[in-house]
Picture 1 (cartoon, rainbow, N blue to C red):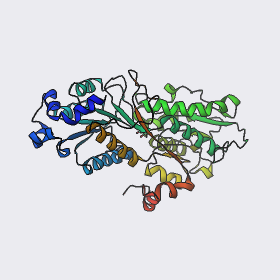
Picture 2 (cartoon, protein in one colour):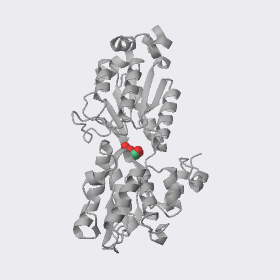
Picture 3 (cartoon, rainbow, N blue to C red):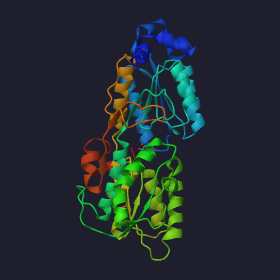
Picture 4 (cartoon, rainbow, N blue to C red):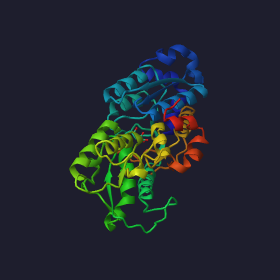
Length: 383
Ligand code: GAL
């Protein structure tokens, strides 16, 4: 691997020649200077999945700003959650002479041909947040501890139900509680990690009878929401309410893996479900992830119970560190070299930690750290 980075660092003219595009893109601006390794002549392609979720907008901007501050040229593209569009955008980055790619995939299995082309042109690839699968040519993975995120989601559900206290200790509460389970998009590797972490945490309580899933839908395939879509989640929740909760069966909690999905679920519960406007009124406990401002406001208002805060500023920063190392011919620091097997190889990874957000730590986690302002928390809108 080292060899490859070294090539990327010094052989920039060579990289362009290999890519068959010497003089194109960044090369056109830099020409001969590029071979001397001037950072300003290096182009980094950043491919993000969608702008419909505010986290990816923040991720894209933070990665771009960090790379530009470090002196690189950046091409940032969003693919509108459309798999062919993402493929084309990456192809174009390669044709333009990108020297490194940072990719958050829509479908983790759909980029093999782009990654083959990148490898042929000696362009290192960093998989961002979501693991790119089935390819030898993923050089590094920067992400959060995704299994632990799932554990935290399930933990927050158990806290909301009163089975655990906020320190994670068993309260002795035996329920039984009726819950339903939602998962993310099956083509996103993360969805499986979140689910595994959550189910490993919930299963003992299900086995003990503290938790029941009245719909019987306990497989990830049944719980999955394609592309993490809010509307799809709302529809599934409405269907569950109709099929399972018509006759006096009370729903107590819902495991949700992402704030957009949570808001879809909450809309269904407040509407068709008529289950109260807030938790205090009888609205079931709903979990989440990403600390999106719309959901943070709902947590503050006692509507959504919790979310998981993954500080995307840190993820962006880490990806810049890794990119710089690679372009300078250094081996980037990994803190996990076992967990993320992409089907072809174990990808060296750098994992960041996440926190559960409850109503009472919004200020300390999100406002004090400058992630959201108090005004944003109050309005539920990012400024
Ligand atoms: C996952 C990501 C989550 C959430 C979700 C929906 O891949 O890890 O944080 O953003 O996608 O966008």
